[in-house]
Image (cartoon, rainbow, N blue to C red; front, side, top):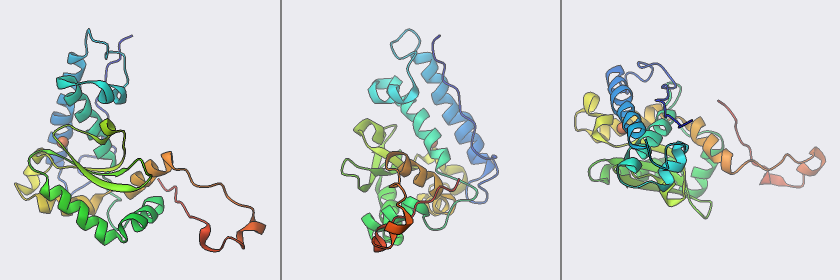
Length: 222
Ligand code: FE2
């Protein structure tokens, strides 16, 4: 059976991110923009070799309109999970430790991520990714482009297309980025990291005393 891609439900109610991101924005962004990418993709892959492939594989291998719509479908599903009504505040669990290691502080990371998103010309995305050397990097991509295409592992995404914020903030991207930090889902980012870099196995209690600070603590909160 040919695979038909479905629009995934938002992981929260339309008004759950208010006052930072409004019901009106989510209804339009998810129900119109994201929905349109999925619908167009399903039309475009008919009678092509992509029609039975999982979305992620299409993103990795397609070009042109099929790539654009597949990547936007994948990017948006990832982005919805990067937001949460219980989000905001400082990083937690594994991602907190990794940010401290690679950016020295959360404040430094937040500043660099925000500046990268502000500098992005036109439409695109700002990302926190894990690179080939197992280090965290900030990167931006234009239009539909995505770190998956570079073989990098996305941990966090911020949609910087104007459709993500113009209803709430007009052209004030900086205000939208402040809103993003108020609802950012650190648990999701931590889970992405743990999925590819699982915690080391627990050591027996009689060995722990000799390891001093070497034991890492990872959270698994939902
Ligand atoms: Fe978007």
